[in-house]
Image (cartoon, rainbow, N blue to C red; front, side, top):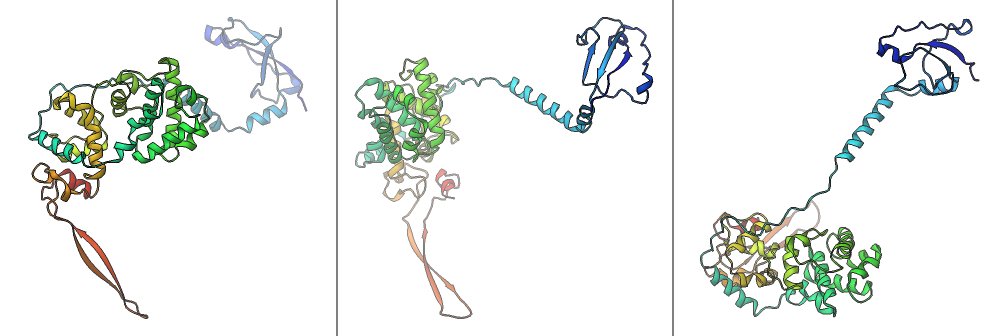
Length: 387
Protein backbone atom coordinates (compact mmCIF):
# COMPACT_ATOMS: atom_id res chain seq x y z
CA UNK A 1 0.00 0.00 0.00
CA UNK A 2 1.48 3.37 -1.04
CA UNK A 3 1.47 6.18 1.41
CA UNK A 4 0.17 9.49 0.30
CA UNK A 5 2.80 12.12 -0.33
CA UNK A 6 3.11 14.69 2.43
CA UNK A 7 4.58 18.05 1.49
CA UNK A 8 7.11 19.02 4.13
CA UNK A 9 8.87 22.32 4.20
CA UNK A 10 12.56 21.66 4.53
CA UNK A 11 15.40 24.05 4.67
CA UNK A 12 17.84 23.68 1.82
CA UNK A 13 20.77 21.57 3.15
CA UNK A 14 23.18 24.09 1.72
CA UNK A 15 21.76 26.75 3.99
CA UNK A 16 23.63 25.31 6.94
CA UNK A 17 26.83 25.54 5.01
CA UNK A 18 26.13 29.08 3.85
CA UNK A 19 25.14 30.37 7.25
CA UNK A 20 21.39 30.71 6.62
CA UNK A 21 18.84 30.02 9.32
CA UNK A 22 17.05 26.72 8.99
CA UNK A 23 13.30 26.78 8.67
CA UNK A 24 11.12 24.74 11.00
CA UNK A 25 9.62 21.43 9.90
CA UNK A 26 5.87 21.75 9.69
CA UNK A 27 4.16 18.36 9.50
CA UNK A 28 0.59 18.14 8.23
CA UNK A 29 -2.07 17.30 10.79
CA UNK A 30 -2.87 14.04 9.06
CA UNK A 31 0.64 12.63 9.46
CA UNK A 32 1.89 14.55 12.48
CA UNK A 33 2.83 11.36 14.33
CA UNK A 34 5.11 10.11 11.53
CA UNK A 35 8.74 11.21 11.73
CA UNK A 36 10.86 11.65 8.61
CA UNK A 37 13.23 8.65 8.60
CA UNK A 38 14.62 7.85 5.16
CA UNK A 39 13.82 9.06 1.71
CA UNK A 40 13.92 6.96 -1.40
CA UNK A 41 13.61 9.89 -3.79
CA UNK A 42 13.88 13.60 -3.16
CA UNK A 43 12.64 15.90 -5.88
CA UNK A 44 11.96 19.59 -6.00
CA UNK A 45 8.57 20.87 -7.00
CA UNK A 46 9.74 21.65 -10.51
CA UNK A 47 10.91 18.03 -10.92
CA UNK A 48 14.68 18.55 -10.74
CA UNK A 49 16.92 16.57 -8.38
CA UNK A 50 18.32 18.47 -5.44
CA UNK A 51 22.05 18.96 -6.20
CA UNK A 52 24.83 19.16 -3.67
CA UNK A 53 25.91 22.55 -5.00
CA UNK A 54 22.48 24.12 -4.67
CA UNK A 55 22.32 27.81 -3.91
CA UNK A 56 21.65 29.11 -0.42
CA UNK A 57 17.87 29.29 -0.55
CA UNK A 58 14.97 27.51 1.08
CA UNK A 59 13.34 24.90 -1.15
CA UNK A 60 10.08 23.06 -0.63
CA UNK A 61 10.36 19.39 -1.51
CA UNK A 62 8.03 16.42 -1.66
CA UNK A 63 9.01 13.05 -0.20
CA UNK A 64 7.44 9.87 -1.54
CA UNK A 65 8.21 6.73 0.42
CA UNK A 66 6.44 3.42 0.05
CA UNK A 67 6.04 1.08 3.01
CA UNK A 68 7.82 -1.72 1.14
CA UNK A 69 10.82 0.55 0.53
CA UNK A 70 11.11 1.43 4.20
CA UNK A 71 10.97 -2.20 5.25
CA UNK A 72 13.65 -3.15 2.71
CA UNK A 73 15.97 -0.38 3.87
CA UNK A 74 15.46 -1.14 7.57
CA UNK A 75 16.12 -4.86 7.05
CA UNK A 76 19.73 -4.25 5.84
CA UNK A 77 22.18 -4.12 8.79
CA UNK A 78 24.44 -1.12 8.71
CA UNK A 79 27.49 -3.31 9.39
CA UNK A 80 26.98 -5.16 6.11
CA UNK A 81 26.67 -1.96 4.14
CA UNK A 82 29.85 -0.62 5.72
CA UNK A 83 31.66 -3.88 5.02
CA UNK A 84 30.75 -3.73 1.34
CA UNK A 85 32.12 -0.21 1.12
CA UNK A 86 35.38 -1.22 2.74
CA UNK A 87 35.87 -4.22 0.47
CA UNK A 88 35.14 -2.16 -2.65
CA UNK A 89 37.58 0.53 -1.62
CA UNK A 90 40.32 -2.02 -0.90
CA UNK A 91 39.81 -3.69 -4.27
CA UNK A 92 40.04 -0.41 -6.14
CA UNK A 93 43.24 0.53 -4.34
CA UNK A 94 44.79 -2.85 -5.10
CA UNK A 95 43.88 -2.68 -8.77
CA UNK A 96 45.00 0.89 -9.08
CA UNK A 97 48.39 0.25 -7.51
CA UNK A 98 49.27 -2.62 -9.86
CA UNK A 99 52.11 -1.81 -12.24
CA UNK A 100 53.85 -3.89 -14.92
CA UNK A 101 56.92 -5.74 -13.71
CA UNK A 102 60.11 -4.51 -15.31
CA UNK A 103 62.74 -6.94 -16.51
CA UNK A 104 66.01 -6.50 -14.65
CA UNK A 105 69.07 -6.35 -16.91
CA UNK A 106 71.31 -9.42 -16.84
CA UNK A 107 74.67 -8.92 -15.15
CA UNK A 108 77.46 -9.96 -17.51
CA UNK A 109 80.60 -9.58 -15.39
CA UNK A 110 81.82 -9.24 -11.82
CA UNK A 111 83.30 -5.97 -10.67
CA UNK A 112 86.13 -7.92 -9.03
CA UNK A 113 87.00 -11.11 -10.98
CA UNK A 114 87.14 -14.39 -9.11
CA UNK A 115 90.67 -15.86 -9.06
CA UNK A 116 91.28 -18.96 -11.14
CA UNK A 117 91.29 -22.10 -8.98
CA UNK A 118 94.49 -24.07 -8.54
CA UNK A 119 94.91 -26.99 -10.96
CA UNK A 120 91.58 -26.25 -12.63
CA UNK A 121 92.98 -27.06 -16.09
CA UNK A 122 94.09 -30.51 -14.92
CA UNK A 123 90.62 -31.28 -13.61
CA UNK A 124 89.00 -29.87 -16.77
CA UNK A 125 91.17 -31.97 -19.08
CA UNK A 126 90.54 -35.09 -16.94
CA UNK A 127 86.78 -34.57 -17.26
CA UNK A 128 87.17 -34.03 -20.98
CA UNK A 129 89.12 -37.27 -21.29
CA UNK A 130 86.49 -39.24 -19.34
CA UNK A 131 83.68 -37.71 -21.39
CA UNK A 132 85.35 -38.75 -24.63
CA UNK A 133 84.75 -42.38 -23.63
CA UNK A 134 81.17 -41.90 -22.41
CA UNK A 135 77.97 -41.22 -24.34
CA UNK A 136 75.60 -39.29 -22.08
CA UNK A 137 71.92 -38.47 -22.69
CA UNK A 138 72.82 -34.84 -23.40
CA UNK A 139 74.98 -36.00 -26.34
CA UNK A 140 72.10 -37.67 -28.19
CA UNK A 141 68.99 -35.96 -26.82
CA UNK A 142 70.17 -32.53 -25.68
CA UNK A 143 68.40 -29.29 -26.52
CA UNK A 144 70.78 -28.58 -29.41
CA UNK A 145 69.43 -31.67 -31.21
CA UNK A 146 65.96 -30.21 -31.77
CA UNK A 147 67.12 -27.97 -34.63
CA UNK A 148 68.40 -30.94 -36.62
CA UNK A 149 64.83 -31.93 -37.51
CA UNK A 150 64.09 -28.54 -39.11
CA UNK A 151 65.16 -27.32 -42.55
CA UNK A 152 64.36 -23.59 -42.34
CA UNK A 153 66.95 -21.65 -40.28
CA UNK A 154 64.25 -19.57 -38.60
CA UNK A 155 62.45 -22.70 -37.46
CA UNK A 156 65.73 -24.26 -36.33
CA UNK A 157 66.29 -21.37 -33.95
CA UNK A 158 62.70 -21.51 -32.70
CA UNK A 159 62.90 -25.28 -32.13
CA UNK A 160 66.05 -24.74 -30.06
CA UNK A 161 64.25 -22.18 -27.91
CA UNK A 162 61.22 -24.43 -27.42
CA UNK A 163 63.44 -27.34 -26.43
CA UNK A 164 65.23 -25.20 -23.84
CA UNK A 165 61.94 -23.94 -22.41
CA UNK A 166 60.71 -27.51 -21.98
CA UNK A 167 63.98 -28.75 -20.48
CA UNK A 168 63.57 -26.96 -17.14
CA UNK A 169 63.15 -29.50 -14.31
CA UNK A 170 63.01 -32.28 -16.92
CA UNK A 171 65.41 -35.00 -18.05
CA UNK A 172 66.84 -34.84 -21.57
CA UNK A 173 65.09 -38.04 -22.60
CA UNK A 174 61.67 -36.66 -21.65
CA UNK A 175 62.35 -33.28 -23.26
CA UNK A 176 63.47 -34.86 -26.52
CA UNK A 177 60.32 -36.97 -26.72
CA UNK A 178 58.09 -34.01 -25.88
CA UNK A 179 59.66 -31.84 -28.61
CA UNK A 180 59.18 -34.59 -31.18
CA UNK A 181 55.55 -35.08 -30.18
CA UNK A 182 54.90 -31.33 -30.24
CA UNK A 183 56.36 -31.12 -33.74
CA UNK A 184 53.97 -33.82 -34.94
CA UNK A 185 51.04 -32.13 -33.21
CA UNK A 186 51.54 -28.78 -34.95
CA UNK A 187 51.97 -30.26 -38.42
CA UNK A 188 55.53 -31.56 -38.77
CA UNK A 189 57.55 -28.39 -38.24
CA UNK A 190 58.04 -26.16 -35.20
CA UNK A 191 57.37 -22.57 -36.21
CA UNK A 192 55.91 -19.51 -34.52
CA UNK A 193 52.81 -19.54 -36.72
CA UNK A 194 52.22 -23.25 -36.13
CA UNK A 195 52.31 -22.78 -32.35
CA UNK A 196 49.95 -19.80 -32.51
CA UNK A 197 47.43 -21.78 -34.57
CA UNK A 198 47.55 -24.82 -32.28
CA UNK A 199 45.07 -25.23 -29.43
CA UNK A 200 46.33 -25.04 -25.88
CA UNK A 201 44.88 -28.47 -25.19
CA UNK A 202 46.81 -30.00 -28.09
CA UNK A 203 50.08 -28.46 -26.90
CA UNK A 204 49.46 -29.63 -23.34
CA UNK A 205 48.77 -33.14 -24.54
CA UNK A 206 52.06 -33.20 -26.44
CA UNK A 207 54.24 -31.94 -23.58
CA UNK A 208 52.37 -33.41 -20.62
CA UNK A 209 55.37 -35.55 -19.57
CA UNK A 210 57.68 -32.61 -18.86
CA UNK A 211 57.77 -30.84 -15.53
CA UNK A 212 55.29 -27.97 -15.02
CA UNK A 213 53.68 -28.68 -18.38
CA UNK A 214 50.59 -26.57 -17.71
CA UNK A 215 52.65 -23.47 -17.05
CA UNK A 216 54.96 -24.24 -19.96
CA UNK A 217 51.97 -24.44 -22.30
CA UNK A 218 51.12 -20.85 -21.41
CA UNK A 219 54.75 -19.76 -21.71
CA UNK A 220 55.10 -21.29 -25.17
CA UNK A 221 51.97 -19.59 -26.52
CA UNK A 222 52.86 -16.25 -24.94
CA UNK A 223 56.46 -16.39 -26.15
CA UNK A 224 55.33 -17.26 -29.68
CA UNK A 225 52.98 -14.29 -29.68
CA UNK A 226 55.77 -11.97 -28.51
CA UNK A 227 58.12 -13.29 -31.19
CA UNK A 228 55.44 -12.75 -33.81
CA UNK A 229 54.60 -9.21 -32.70
CA UNK A 230 58.02 -7.84 -31.75
CA UNK A 231 60.75 -9.94 -33.39
CA UNK A 232 59.39 -10.76 -36.85
CA UNK A 233 58.68 -14.36 -35.75
CA UNK A 234 62.36 -15.04 -35.08
CA UNK A 235 64.48 -15.64 -31.97
CA UNK A 236 66.11 -12.50 -30.50
CA UNK A 237 69.88 -12.11 -30.59
CA UNK A 238 70.51 -10.63 -27.14
CA UNK A 239 70.32 -12.10 -23.65
CA UNK A 240 68.08 -9.35 -22.28
CA UNK A 241 65.56 -9.74 -25.10
CA UNK A 242 65.47 -13.50 -24.65
CA UNK A 243 65.00 -13.17 -20.89
CA UNK A 244 62.07 -10.82 -21.50
CA UNK A 245 60.14 -13.75 -22.99
CA UNK A 246 57.86 -15.69 -20.61
CA UNK A 247 59.52 -18.80 -19.19
CA UNK A 248 63.06 -17.94 -20.37
CA UNK A 249 65.89 -17.46 -17.87
CA UNK A 250 69.61 -16.63 -18.19
CA UNK A 251 70.70 -20.26 -18.63
CA UNK A 252 68.28 -20.78 -21.52
CA UNK A 253 69.21 -17.42 -23.05
CA UNK A 254 72.96 -18.08 -23.13
CA UNK A 255 72.53 -21.62 -24.46
CA UNK A 256 70.04 -20.43 -27.07
CA UNK A 257 72.46 -17.80 -28.36
CA UNK A 258 75.22 -20.42 -28.58
CA UNK A 259 73.14 -23.09 -30.34
CA UNK A 260 70.77 -20.94 -32.43
CA UNK A 261 72.96 -17.98 -33.39
CA UNK A 262 76.49 -19.30 -32.65
CA UNK A 263 77.04 -16.31 -30.36
CA UNK A 264 79.36 -16.75 -27.39
CA UNK A 265 77.72 -14.34 -24.96
CA UNK A 266 78.22 -16.29 -21.73
CA UNK A 267 78.02 -19.65 -19.96
CA UNK A 268 74.78 -21.55 -19.53
CA UNK A 269 74.83 -22.80 -15.94
CA UNK A 270 72.32 -25.46 -14.88
CA UNK A 271 72.17 -27.66 -11.78
CA UNK A 272 74.93 -29.97 -13.04
CA UNK A 273 77.42 -27.17 -13.71
CA UNK A 274 76.51 -25.50 -10.43
CA UNK A 275 76.91 -28.73 -8.42
CA UNK A 276 80.09 -30.04 -10.02
CA UNK A 277 82.07 -26.80 -9.94
CA UNK A 278 81.24 -26.42 -6.26
CA UNK A 279 82.28 -30.01 -5.55
CA UNK A 280 85.58 -29.27 -7.27
CA UNK A 281 86.10 -26.28 -4.99
CA UNK A 282 86.24 -23.78 -7.85
CA UNK A 283 84.26 -21.15 -5.92
CA UNK A 284 85.54 -19.45 -2.78
CA UNK A 285 83.22 -19.12 -0.97
CA UNK A 286 80.84 -21.71 -2.47
CA UNK A 287 78.16 -20.18 -4.68
CA UNK A 288 74.51 -20.43 -3.72
CA UNK A 289 72.81 -19.85 -7.07
CA UNK A 290 73.56 -20.76 -10.71
CA UNK A 291 73.88 -17.06 -11.52
CA UNK A 292 76.67 -16.65 -8.97
CA UNK A 293 78.36 -19.69 -10.46
CA UNK A 294 78.08 -18.26 -13.98
CA UNK A 295 79.62 -14.92 -13.04
CA UNK A 296 82.49 -16.62 -11.21
CA UNK A 297 83.26 -18.97 -14.10
CA UNK A 298 83.06 -16.24 -16.72
CA UNK A 299 85.57 -14.13 -14.79
CA UNK A 300 88.44 -16.65 -15.12
CA UNK A 301 87.56 -19.48 -17.51
CA UNK A 302 89.07 -18.86 -20.99
CA UNK A 303 86.50 -17.48 -23.43
CA UNK A 304 86.95 -20.30 -25.94
CA UNK A 305 85.78 -22.83 -23.33
CA UNK A 306 82.50 -21.06 -22.56
CA UNK A 307 80.41 -22.74 -25.29
CA UNK A 308 81.48 -26.30 -24.43
CA UNK A 309 81.56 -26.39 -20.64
CA UNK A 310 77.81 -26.83 -20.22
CA UNK A 311 77.48 -30.03 -22.28
CA UNK A 312 80.78 -31.29 -20.88
CA UNK A 313 79.74 -31.03 -17.23
CA UNK A 314 76.09 -31.97 -17.83
CA UNK A 315 77.13 -35.29 -19.37
CA UNK A 316 79.68 -35.79 -16.60
CA UNK A 317 76.95 -35.18 -14.02
CA UNK A 318 74.52 -37.52 -15.76
CA UNK A 319 76.93 -40.46 -15.85
CA UNK A 320 79.57 -40.13 -13.10
CA UNK A 321 79.21 -37.15 -10.77
CA UNK A 322 75.49 -37.64 -10.11
CA UNK A 323 73.62 -35.67 -7.43
CA UNK A 324 73.17 -38.74 -5.20
CA UNK A 325 75.62 -41.62 -5.06
CA UNK A 326 78.37 -40.29 -7.34
CA UNK A 327 80.72 -42.90 -8.80
CA UNK A 328 83.86 -41.54 -7.17
CA UNK A 329 85.55 -44.97 -7.36
CA UNK A 330 85.58 -44.75 -11.17
CA UNK A 331 86.34 -41.04 -11.43
CA UNK A 332 89.85 -39.87 -12.25
CA UNK A 333 89.32 -36.68 -10.24
CA UNK A 334 89.36 -38.68 -7.01
CA UNK A 335 93.16 -38.89 -7.31
CA UNK A 336 93.76 -35.55 -5.69
CA UNK A 337 91.84 -33.23 -8.01
CA UNK A 338 88.44 -33.27 -6.25
CA UNK A 339 88.26 -32.20 -2.60
CA UNK A 340 84.79 -33.71 -2.32
CA UNK A 341 85.74 -37.21 -3.55
CA UNK A 342 84.65 -40.10 -1.36
CA UNK A 343 87.51 -42.21 -0.11
CA UNK A 344 87.20 -45.97 -0.42
CA UNK A 345 84.76 -48.21 -2.19
CA UNK A 346 81.23 -48.97 -1.19
CA UNK A 347 80.81 -51.99 1.01
CA UNK A 348 77.76 -54.09 1.73
CA UNK A 349 76.88 -54.99 5.27
CA UNK A 350 74.15 -57.46 6.13
CA UNK A 351 71.84 -56.50 8.96
CA UNK A 352 69.48 -59.09 10.41
CA UNK A 353 66.22 -57.86 11.88
CA UNK A 354 64.25 -60.32 13.99
CA UNK A 355 60.52 -59.98 14.35
CA UNK A 356 58.98 -61.92 17.23
CA UNK A 357 55.27 -62.59 17.57
CA UNK A 358 53.39 -64.28 20.38
CA UNK A 359 52.20 -67.04 18.08
CA UNK A 360 53.54 -68.37 14.82
CA UNK A 361 57.02 -68.95 13.39
CA UNK A 362 60.02 -66.73 13.94
CA UNK A 363 60.66 -64.28 11.05
CA UNK A 364 64.07 -62.96 10.04
CA UNK A 365 64.53 -60.18 7.47
CA UNK A 366 67.95 -59.51 5.93
CA UNK A 367 68.63 -55.94 4.80
CA UNK A 368 71.52 -54.77 2.65
CA UNK A 369 72.93 -51.52 4.01
CA UNK A 370 75.56 -49.59 2.11
CA UNK A 371 78.38 -48.02 4.07
CA UNK A 372 80.79 -45.58 2.56
CA UNK A 373 84.01 -44.13 3.90
CA UNK A 374 83.28 -40.51 3.15
CA UNK A 375 85.73 -37.66 3.26
CA UNK A 376 86.15 -36.23 6.71
CA UNK A 377 85.73 -32.64 5.50
CA UNK A 378 82.38 -31.54 6.93
CA UNK A 379 82.26 -28.53 4.63
CA UNK A 380 82.31 -30.66 1.50
CA UNK A 381 79.35 -29.92 -0.80
CA UNK A 382 79.00 -33.62 -1.44
CA UNK A 383 78.56 -34.42 2.23
CA UNK A 384 75.82 -31.83 2.45
CA UNK A 385 73.93 -33.32 -0.49
CA UNK A 386 74.12 -36.87 0.79
CA UNK A 387 73.05 -35.91 4.30
